[in-house]
Amino acid sequence: MRNLVRELRAERGLSQGQLGEALGVSRQTVNAIETERYTPSLPLAIALARYFGRTVEEVFFHDGAERNGAS
Amino acid sequence: MTERSGTVRRDVTRSRWLLPGFSLAMGAALFGAATYGGHPTDGLWMFGVMALVAAGVLVASRWSETISGLSGPGRDERLEMIDLRATALSGLVIISAVIVGFLVELGRGHGGSPFGELGAIGGVAYVAAVVFFRTRG
Image (cartoon, rainbow over all chains, first blue to last red; front, side):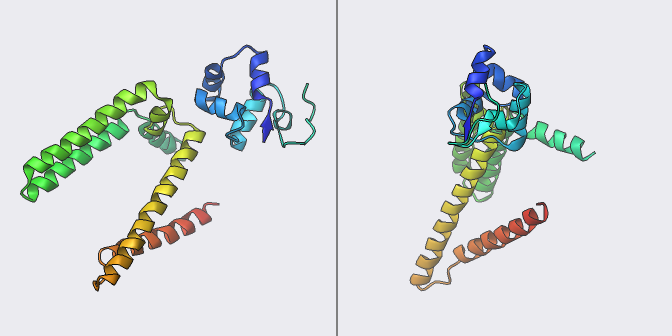
């Protein structure tokens, strides 16, 4: 499962720790999501997408799938 | 009510003192059992080892997010998943050892005790857990 978390976080100038704190997860978990070693649960994926003002499909997508409305 | 109970339980399981406290309690239980069995010196050693484990967890959790998360505070869904998988793997290792022990005991002409009983407990617990979690979706 691919995602745009790193790009969206960088756009806002946040550190992994700051994003993790905002979402109630550890810095390591944010790093694991960004490096695609961990696929978050649906509630966390929704929280991430809402935090960035996107839909889940815009932030998370399958390899080879067309990004849905991501800039 | 349910949510409040869940919150209280979560607060307890997220305390940084839970694992060290459990280690110390386990050490005290080992000391008590060894003393009752007539070996208080062995019991003191066991308590000392468990106290070292408790201190090690407390100190290590200050610089390791993984140890901190696995021992309580800072636990998130990824660490819960890691904990779950590690517990499942540990269970697999233990049940494998029990099966091997049972076979060895049978091969030595014994009844297989206590490995047979341990294996039965593991099997019944597994089936009960499957039934329980199946009903919870």
